[in-house]
Image (cartoon, rainbow, N blue to C red; front, top):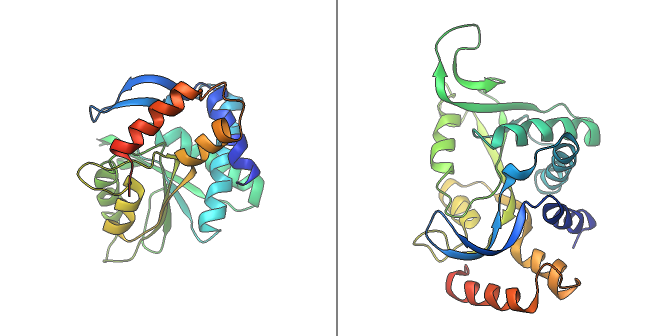
Length: 228
């Protein structure tokens, strides 16, 4: 496992973004872990977070993109922090863009987008915190493609999230990121996967965060909900 992935896992725990216990997900599933990117609240945390995302994007997609699209609301600070980090780490200026929940009907920047206005010829990477079912992309994808003046003029290079939960997405036996790739035709990647988290904090860790008891609950959870 790359060193920055290990650092990111410990960073999530340190910021109390990744927690272990008893949680009820939006889907109704009872999960032994939960991730909340809204817990990144300080300048230093967002600075470090942007660098982790930038490294993962560079590893997975290289420099062959122009725009980072962060869906409202959590995607807005993620996109902003990451384009700053990308400039600092790799010397390339990436534009950021987000959607508005409600269209602005006045001023020079009226419309449904915030920041850069995506246009024909742009290559876009979508950035999110985590996806369990893959449903969020059903709103995001049409908003990006709606900016085209002709079909195929805007290319979505891929999607990046913090954590691949590696569990069944809805009625599928596949993980949400695999469902997205299969349906939309672009790669969906994560900075780390839950198997890497378990490897770091339990198999090769001190078991202070993932204890034997929590590991048993994780095993039971993935026996029922794990993706194939």
